[in-house]
Length: 451
Image: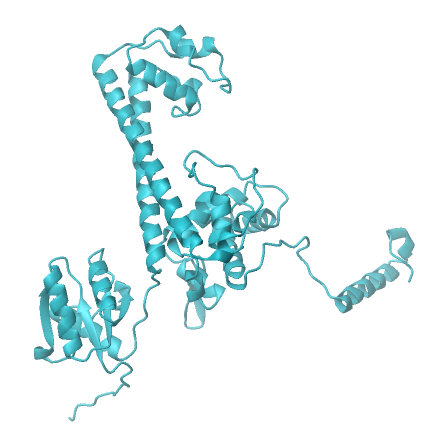
């Protein structure tokens, strides 16, 4: 029998596909065996790869987002003037059983030529620089948290139960006592004298908890962890200074944004993990051109910093609608229908740092009282539980932020959840009066006007 073929329209005439690897890159400019080449990962070999693509009259390139191996190649291709499409690996999977580097790059080239691939969201260069600083700062905070846990462990093994009488051992009282212990002080009464005035426990209670066993090896490890914690705090402060300098450079380039001023927000609590040196309230207001995101209840400095570093100032405009923005965040249901029946409508797996920040803000909103978003949270939690309410409120926050940044409007929560025009109000009043007439009651008895 004669073989049949289903023709498909070529969308990208001059397309190439790259299978990115840790030691070599396979590049395909067509489906022929002579149209696939392998290049190394060194700088000279990346330049040779770029020159070969230009010599083949390639204008657009598609590649998978494999780890961090794609970043230097992506930058080099963009600088050469090529249009680069970064794709999610699950959208470029080949047929089962056919898995080689040559076939992978040819399959990516074929999909890209037919226009079947969509690119991932990538911020601009300034946002990428800010994102690098913020992610490094988050890594330092995680390491400092591990160091704090180790200090607490060694204090417990020394039978110095500082964690019982002090809420946070890295606070003013806790750090002063730990430094004195590492310097050789063993008298509980003298250690209790380092108590700060805001500490709830008295000196007598603190002294009872600080009668340790004085083990030498544990004191040594405690001193080591204390030095590590101090070093990490210095690194975090240096990272905060670099972030502030970068933000001021970006704001200073625009005269209009530089002259913007916002109201202080003393009710927004600044915890110990938030940047202490910079005024993030003022910087965020100028960064977004007069849009005050901190007016939203539940949104903290950490939420705003995550938005600035992951999306940027103008990156949110790459999403035409709020639905696409929430879909990118994976905060909307992934409905699966087969045979006319809904199989699943759960939120898809996976998350990014902005989604985590919005969910943390939604969790805080659930603990508030008598606000627009907290009332919404409690209505959803009553029907579907707290976990569903966190996801729903996080999605609502994302929609609010998208509208505020896209249309440059302030946050103005409605005082009533039901908006009725005059005709609907009149119909509702007439319906109520008819029901009252059936009960043989006068409208004046229920507080309605006779007119």
